[in-house]
Length: 301
Image (cartoon, rainbow, N blue to C red; front, side, top):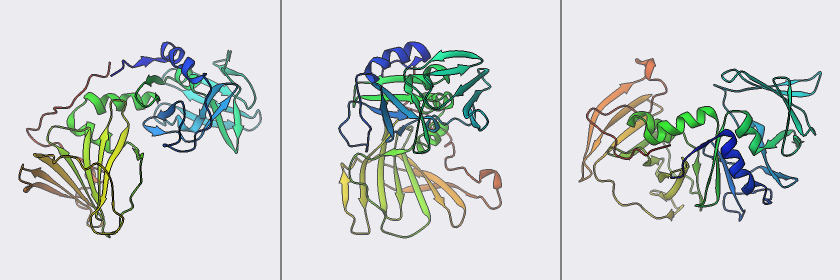
């Protein structure tokens, strides 16, 4: 995997790619020179201003590290990053940003369109503490917020249960036909190969979805099948996981159960947690499995 680059060095490398001339992107499958992802989410609302790629400011969403506000008296957009002790002021049409009282030139003017504020990609990576890299595979520009970078490291090389939580939190990218569930119910089952976090199968209302997380932290849907309806199948069915672990979330009963699956497909429940009587597990989907060791960790630097 390409080494991840911080702030200015990375932004300068990618700037040449972004300034080559892109167009407004409409969908994940539209033919475009580059595809931009922020924290794993594909950006389908991108502008080109004076040969510079502009993304929505709100897409750089990091409430733990960055806050946004609007000052009506001055019509300034205020961005604060208390971790880095930075306060940024932006204004529609200006090609400068005020950063802690100092004027800094932007690649392109701040643009407000349809009530949305767009800024150069380089700005969010250089000035707001983000990271950026360019992936030749798929011509993808990968941007992450400060918290997003922390989550990426957990995803790729962190503890197994935490990495699985990070994987399930990623937005799913479907390049082909997206199949809708046909059945009914309130139970979702997540199955991971033993020791792994970067691929899983999700079962919900009769729809089976296989997801792989690539080296850039993007969750790609590789296969879907409607097992009880008439919505068909798309993609390539994966080989059987063999030994695996499952986590079953029964939303109606508010119970999380989990266990193991052997190579023959026989499942063994290890525990069931009644969230009503154990509110500390209210939002828990993944539990650590005793004795399980991660086998798919990857270096992130």
